[in-house]
Length: 164
Image 1 (cartoon, one colour):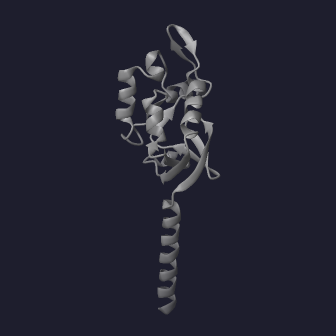
Image 2 (cartoon, one colour):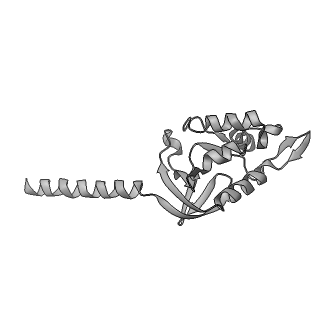
Image 3 (cartoon, helix red, strand yellow):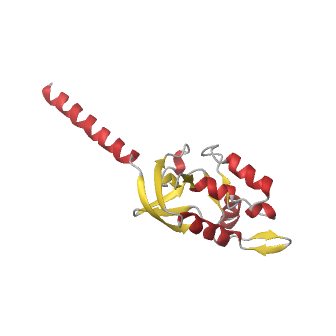
C-alpha cells in the first residue's frame, strides 16, 4: 500500500512538473523560417490560428503576377524584428495536426498572427480558432495585402501542388 501511495505522489509531481514546463512561455528573439513558422529560443513554432501564403505562392494584382508568398515572408520578418517574442504553446483541436508545435506569440504585446492577418498576409484558420477572423475581415475591408488582388487560399494552393 505504501509503495502505491509513493508511486501516486511521484506520478502527481511528474505530471505537475510536465504541465508547468508545457505552460512556461518561450521567450527570445524570433527568426523566420517560413511564412507562418518562427524559431524562438531554439524552438520551431507554427503560428496558431492562421495560414500564411506559401513562400513560392504567386497571387495576382491588377492582372499581373504578384509574389504574395515572398511578401508574406518579408512581412513576418518585419514584425519579428520589433523585439523579443513571448510564445505560449497551443493545442490544435484536430488531432492530426497536433504533431506540429503550435503557439500564440506576441511581441511588445501585439499578437504576431493577428498582425499577419490584419496586414492581409495570412488567413484565419477557422478549424483551429475563430480568434483571427475579425482581423482577416478588417484586412479584406481595407483591401490590405492579398485582398487587393486575386489569390488562392494557402491550403488550396498546397492541395493543388499535391494533386488533391
